[in-house]
Image (cartoon, rainbow over all chains, first blue to last red; front, top):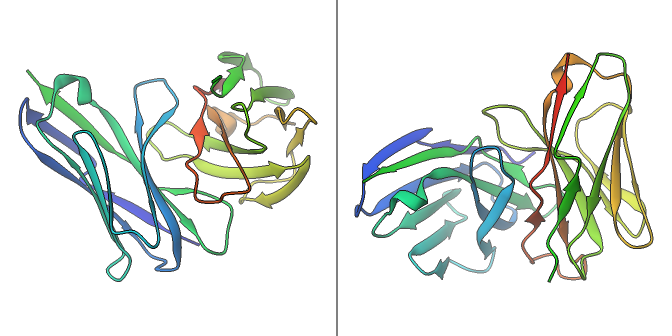
Length: 112
Length: 114
């Protein structure tokens, strides 16, 4: 089973800083990896999906990378804003399964 | 384009009761998955439905069951509710023919067991 770990569990940064969230996974036979945002009491909003054949994806101020050989993915957020405050979850889908396997998330607080 | 919608938003039940949660998939999506998210944890995969058949299941007991209807909407049924079933239940849909499309989630149903 694909095990996913996210570090750090919580992060607080001042507005305007660039930051990196980390995600590691155990099964290198990964089909794709998806990053989500979750606001308190809400569902998940898909941010970026990286296919196994890709190294990175970008959307606006967000950039996600995937390194299958090391079992790592990073989400880079440029010029952080208070509106970026949320929990960020990564989820890997293995070649052999249907499920998304989630980490526990990183809780991000961006202070004005 | 209509997103994934779930009902009800909140539900309170007591131990031993049964509950049915509902999900309407995003337009054009024929695959629906259900996840359980306990407080402070990442979502855990319950099962997936494609063309009205269960085609994948996580580590959940048989008292968790589901249905998918011809219009691709879905239900999650939980029998003999236990205190540990208290969680946010999330539904996600995707187009099955392209496995590399992102899954889109609803806002979930918050289930509390007393």
